[in-house]
Image (cartoon, rainbow, N blue to C red; front, side, top):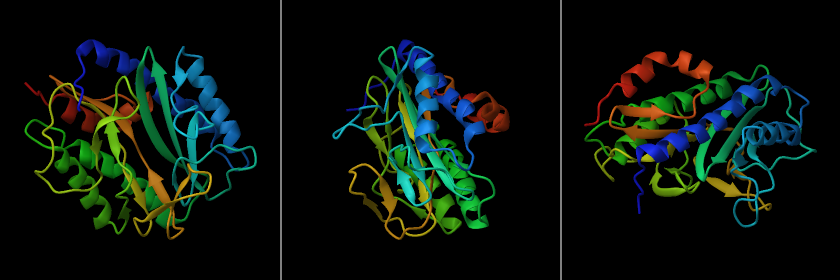
Length: 271
């Protein structure tokens, strides 16, 4: 069941998302060779709790997730477990997926960072993954359906020769970290649930250098590409309001970077 959010609920989610986005501002300067994923996770934890929020991923699920962030390196797609024994290396790409709970509501977002200079194919993978989010979000307009979003993401990534994972999806969000509907990164235009005011969702392309097939590691959390090739992940929480689409988990610098795109979607009246 899809739960449409009131303006008051979106206001609280907006703050949860602001806190979530602040993690990327805090952590970006620390993405360097030699730092452990445990140290990065501590930065995530401290950033969130210092703002009177709760790390949404900590102790989530069964078995309970042991970190405040999912930190996934190279062939790891999602749900990488932070460890004192796992350090970033020059040339890696690392996806940091974070969430914050504030006053009973959640924000969720992910970025993939490069550790120094990475090989051109991986650099392109990270860029196309982020671009595909914007291709998808441009389809969030009156009269469109969920399938229009997924189709746009899939088309953009496959046109660049990358794989689009089928078994992992975006999702609704609100008083629960994961709610209906599932928001696929592939699909057929014109199909699926019609978009409407009050929906709050996470669009999160998870894109691979090669095959879209994945497998779960013995730790029961970490998901890797089946062919061992690299993966990138980019996610934002967004809300549909009467005024248009509001992307809730962008940092201040990202808002400047995407000012033109934001103007186009935020001024797209829904009523």
